[in-house]
Structure formats: structure tokens, C-alpha cells
Image 1 (spheres, rainbow, N blue to C red):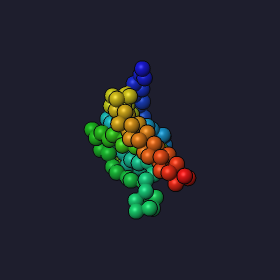
Image 2: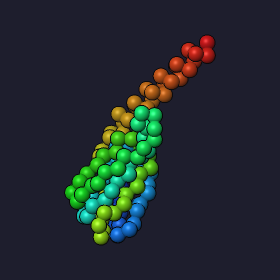
Image 3: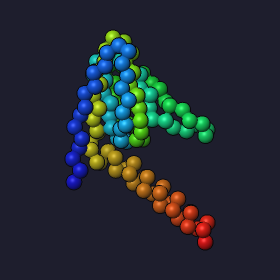
Length: 114
């Protein structure tokens, strides 16, 4: 059985950024200060973009998809905690969705080959 990952504390001061790769289901909690969150790259109308939002003190944000993100402090300092909602249970729907999509692509590819 998968153990839930431990929480990571990230302390940022003015001008600092933090880049990290996180799995879907991870939760960011801003304990102090404010940060700009640049989410994982996505496609919008076929064009790549990175969603950007400001998270103030007390805000939480759950990642819907895995990927690289960047935190940038907005102010003199910020303290952010990265944790998971429920460990493997939080990621289960995303994993099942990914498996279903992969099976559909495999079946479609096999149909076009025959």
C-alpha cells in the first residue's frame, strides 16, 4: 500500500522563485504571504499556455494534473506547504482516467492498423 507523501515546507523571500514537478492531487497551502502560481503547461485551442494565478495567505490550490509549476513570491516573503489530500486515494480518479485514455488510444490505433 502506498504511503501518503510527507508535507514539504517552502520558504521564499523577495525575488525568489521555486520550480518543482508535482503529481495530480497535490495541494498547495499558503501559510504566510502571497505567491504567484504558474501551473503546468496546458493547451488552449491548440496553443500552449501556462495558467497563472495569485494565491494569498490562507489560500489552497489542488493540482488537477501533474506537471512542472513555478511559485514566485509576491511581497517580502511567503511560506507555502505542499502536501497531498489523501495520498493514493486523491490520485486514483486521475490514474483511472489516464489508463482509460491510454486503452482507447491503443484500441483506436489497432483498428486503424487492420
